[in-house]
Length: 146
Image (cartoon, rainbow, N blue to C red; front, side, top):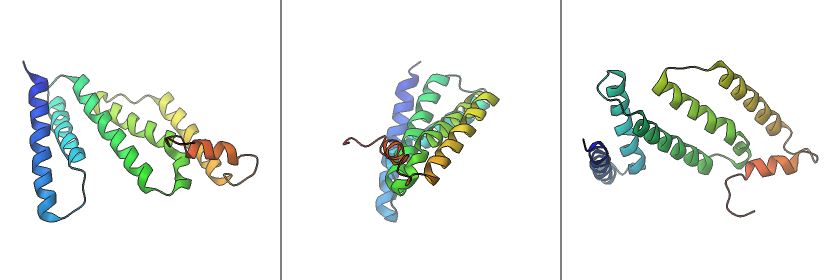
């Protein structure tokens, strides 16, 4: 079966439709994001109803959306909030994992809780001279220039 071909074709067609809709409505949206998310939402529904079984491609597409959401938030949020990058990204990854597997691992949620609390502590004390360097390193984790 040419599964990848049909998935790529679906993404391409939704992408073109989204570009058309974007030009008509003049609404700002990422046509690539709409295309990928639309296709994985349909595939997730088919998977949950036992009509689709390829969790690899489903996971890849969900992961692409997670990365897109992360970078969108990274660009739009105030720089001070970027200290929450790691727990935010891992939380979205956990949600994607649960969407596919229905498996909730309490240890993962324990770790996420600790990461959110550490990030919150870093956010509160980011201007403290002893912690500012660490907070800046975390805040600039995805910047290409140092």
